[in-house]
Amino acid sequence: MSKATKKEWFRVRRIKFFDTTLRDGEQQPGLNLNREEKLKIAKQLDRLGVDIIEAGFPASNEGDFYSVQQIARAVKKSSVTGLSRLSKSDIDTAWEALKDSPEPRIHLFIATSDVHINHKLMSTQAQVIQDSVEAVRYAKERFSVVQWSAEDACRTDWDFLKKIMEKVIEAGVDVINLPDTVGYTTAQEIRAMFQHLKENVKGAKDIALSTHCHDDLGMAVANSLAAIEGGADQVECTINGIGERAGNASLEEIAVALHIRRDHYGAEQNLNLQEIKRTSSLVSKLSGNVVPGNKAVVGNNAFAHESGIHQDGVLKESSTYEIITPELVGVDANKLVLGKLSGKHAFKNKVSELGFDLPEAELKRVFKAFKQLANKKKDISDDDIFALLVADKNEDEAKAYEMLSLQVNVGTHNIPTATITMKLPDGEETQEAATGSGSVEAVYNTLERIVGAPIQLDDYRIQSVSSGEDALAEVVVHVTYAEQTSIGRGTAHDVLEASAYAYVNAINRILAAVPDEVPKPSVHS
Ligand SMILES: CC(=O)SCCNC(=O)CCNC(=O)[C@H](O)C(C)(C)COP(=O)(O)OP(=O)(O)OC[C@H]1O[C@@H](n2cnc3c(N)ncnc32)[C@H](O)[C@@H]1OP(=O)(O)O
Ligand SMILES: CC(C)C(=O)C(=O)O
Ligand SMILES: [Mg+2]
Image 1 (tube, rainbow, N blue to C red):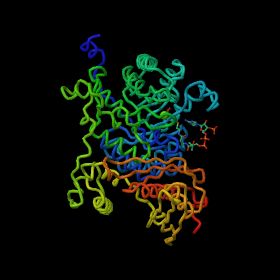
Image 2 (cartoon, rainbow, N blue to C red):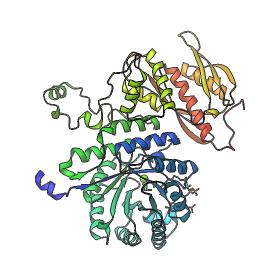
Image 3 (cartoon, helix red, strand yellow):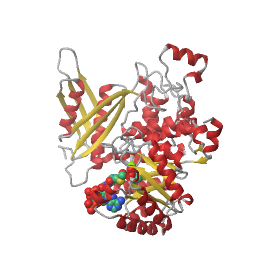
Image 4 (tube, helix red, strand yellow):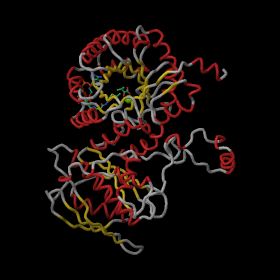
């Protein structure tokens, strides 16, 4: 088929981006973002220009409720939504969380496949239809936009899907989402499903159809794009593809594919693609999920050319081997402009260039950290400043541990020993020392002694924030305490200091997260 014919085949239409990083993305095992982090991500998603932010599942827990409410109040351009089961109490809770949003929007869901209805819901198709219709009607009395999802739609019988869709359309639904909940479908199948339902479901052309794909077979992006070819008007995805099990379709890959292959998809979108790299870095830092170097669009190697023939081609004409320019997605980072002689005006300017709008007190805190860093590091890159901007600040500092000093003795012939002075949550100071078979272990053994609780270290990762011998080290740890998993992040010039900060950060997050009845990790309380 010629390009011209292809263009005629797909009418140009606007695809809406529904970002679920803060809901389905947060369902990634071990991921636990706090409210401040969720708000930071929501604000960045707003700058990226996503149409809808799914901020959480308000009825599932108090933390999600308050976080959805805070985001619904703070975000002005993107619409904000929250997930809800079909019960009136879930819908009422979602309303309380979302009613202050400029366009209150709810996302109802219920499973429609036989395997889910029979074995999970232990219900019947007739009951699922009745519950869906009642929930849509009830939600419509409150919300301006009601979305209903047929969980496991891609393994649902098409005749049943048609029947239930017609019923919820009659009940007044605005958007129907047809997820591939378990990442099972193929591109041909999902394209045909959307085409069939759009053509054959009465009223389907008057509402929006949405696609939501998971990556269990590594096909989430391809399947989302195929659903768009089949008629989906909205695509649901997450930044860096984070999410339950193998994750969701990655927003950046779908967005850039739609842009680069406009000739094929004939689809417009509202995203500011230059915010993509920054959004990916923010989510990566806050979630502790390192983006692999070879990840499409946002990996560090996405624009690197190593082999001679490629380098030769790119030097002669970049389009020989580059279909995406780094600038398109905001990769021109590492401009070295600030240093120890920079003042707060230039710093403030850089902070807003990086997309942050900080209150004066917070700006002061980060500026102080910047000055400290600039005294140790010659060149300060955008990545360094970004790391300082997203560094953890304890929401409830009164409860937190604060490391006052760290000293480590290490050598080829002695046993590594760490000594740490710590301010405890009750304000007292203490000093402890311990040894380990390596220096990081000595630091962690000392911290464990101070905290005096069985905190299990599940994972430890280290990387450098920018390049060069004086690069900042960034450590991410995953820990478990009282059945709560938590991540902790630490950034410092020195790897041991960064390791200690990461562990202390994880402990502080646990202190904030574990219910009051669970004994807190402290021998000194
Ligand atoms: C495909 C998805 O991503 S769906 C969203 C998944 N996200 C989450 O589950 C994260 C948040 N979840 C939670 O915090 C908890 O699971 C809660 C608070 C929602 C529910 O907790 P619990 O009441 O303890 O139930 P639990 O999670 O053990 O089991 C789920 C129950 O909900 C039922 N259920 C599942 N989907 C729905 C639905 N859409 N509407 C109503 N009930 C549902 C299940 O059948 C099961 O019912 P049962 O208790 O009668 O057997
Ligand atoms: C709740 C629904 C939309 C979901 O996440 C899924 O089916 O994967
Ligand atoms: Mg999902």
